[in-house]
Length: 123
Length: 462
Image (cartoon, rainbow over all chains, first blue to last red; front, top):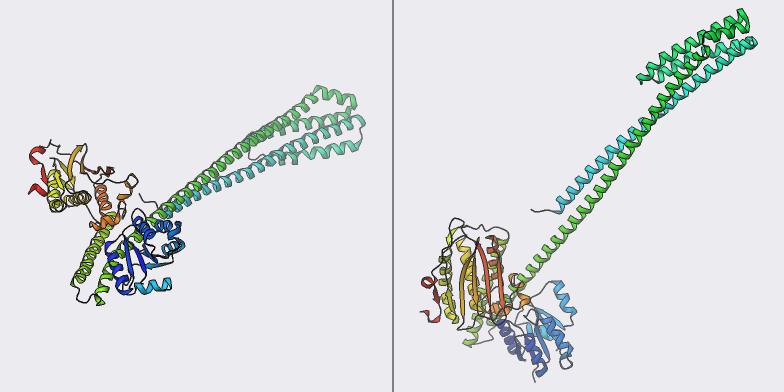
């Protein structure tokens, strides 16, 4: 059975591209959420094997979404990879310190994205 | 006025140098005055000492003369002569010491004459003693008022001593006053220098804080622009990458979808770049407003015309209530501002709701208002929405074609017109964006006949 990945991003186009990449190249089942709130809800219901989480989102951003996921028993163990357009070293360090499993910078190559995720998660 | 750290430090340095210069000059003057004062005091003491020696030598010579009168011992006579002859060098020394004091110089001949008279009388008395014996000598002295003459000499000397003592106390007083003055000046200068240093340090700190704040804001802006550039680039790079991989085969729908993503995000990039350049130009003053007297009503109608298509597309009723007033404005920029606010209002309005563009006179300005019945703005975002990339809901705004720079650009345009852009809003009830532009002072606002001129732009206005 293929792995299930939850993709949380508020940008419709990026969601579409990443999902296409993960499904068609990675061969995974992808579930989509367009906000942090929706993402936490889906994570609780679907228990995905990994979460790709955008950082800059309105209302509930990536950092607070990650905190919520970590705070809940049912989702605390799910590895989370940040997907971010914040590429400055200080910003990346801050994200790293939040406890995510890895960071993927935007723009990413959709042909390589699944490989990057495999490396981060050692799949 | 731009105050740089360099200017502040330089000003502080100049003030400090000036104060140090004052302290230096005052100190030098004080030291010179003290040295001169000390010299004068020791000079006075020398004069008093000479007068004491003179007085003592005269008394001793009188004693020797008396000894000779009583005993007729030759040694007394020799001693008397030596003491008498020693008087003249003392007088010469006194004259020399008081050369700078005319009053003392006037006293010396008087004293000298009294002394000479006194010794002439003693010499005569001694001759009488030799010729006529002790009684004749005593009588001679009494007849010629010897004692009075002696007192006169002592009186003259005392007078000169008094004069010198008076000078001494005057000098002491002057010295004391000048030392006190110097002390006050030095203390004041040091106090001022401390204030100057404290003030400079405060200004430097304020400058540094301000500079840091500007740098922080610049860094934040660059970071935000970088983020805003990367987001559409991710979509462009991604869609083109997927297309290029041949992954979609002959799936035309996927091809079309990816191409649309690429085109949509390229347009977004162009808008973003244009807006970033625009706000940079506005903020750095590279755009000069061409302010002329123009008709506010015409501009309002023009803005309405431009936004008609968008309003119709969204099913929003756009109502323009033009006023007849002349304002001092750059018409192109004002139009840009009005269409921007209208576009925001339409974007965030539900189909079937109304957006109103109105204006009223708030002398000396004309206040424009763009009202909508949209979702409103949360209280905590009312200020930040005017900052770059601080939309209430950035993704929402992007989906609706915004760059996150529309309101900052509007605010800058209004600010450069000497007006202010603001907003009043209630969640789920709507928002009113308003700004002021100065009325043209030469013309008065006429009460508009909105009934005739009002225009409605909406789905069903066609």
